[in-house]
Length: 328
Image 1: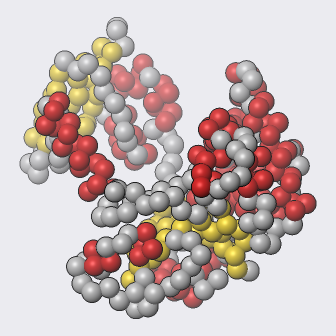
Image 2: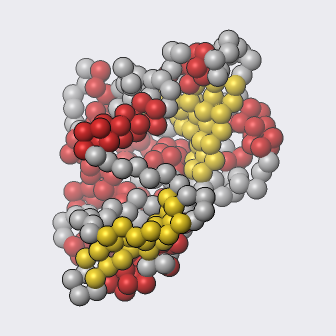
């Protein structure tokens, strides 16, 4: 089995446990559209946020139903930030600061002030269609995503469909026919020696690039930039700073849930934070310790929108986790 069972998650602040997210699919609660289902199912799971604040989330229901009513309406939501929408819909500041903001930071990697209201509503709309069980999460139970998902898929495509995987290969330019506006080939550089090659007669070209790669590719593809201005605009987008850490402890740590979200800590400097107890998710303890005898818990901690933390040294980040964030 590749995945764990569905697991709950917890939200922690400097004041301790703020809320827990249950596993909806295994509960006896009725399934209701988002956000009604989440509010109803988690009514007793909020430890500190008052009921009066929690119920203000219902104000978003109108926006979920309204934002895609027409192209003009969608554009209006897209020009508005999620923060502005929350104010208009009467969502309480405490609910935003204690629950919604950290959720957006670890889900969409930006605070509500920097997110389009349309993007935030699209996320909720998707879950509204699928009911609250779509919030349930499973995690990788062993090894890594590359080992148990990507590599088997690649091998299957290679064996059964003739897929060619070219490692150490960089795309320099996408060649297009300006008259037909179709991709005709790609120019690539292969190997350590940087040998140039052109692949012609393409049926399609799929881009799967980060911000830096997109910027480099569009700069080298003037014909594509000319006929696809939306790709040129996409190449001007910035990336999101992320820090990932893994810490091996000399003792075991017991938590209510193996997956956890951090919020409202001054030390986060505006970032979103998560931490996972990998020893609670992956039963092969020796594998987590590189084949050695397990000595304690293994923590995986990630920070999103982490520009304020990037200047810190590794020691400072470890100290932040061990002395401020995790003790809460």
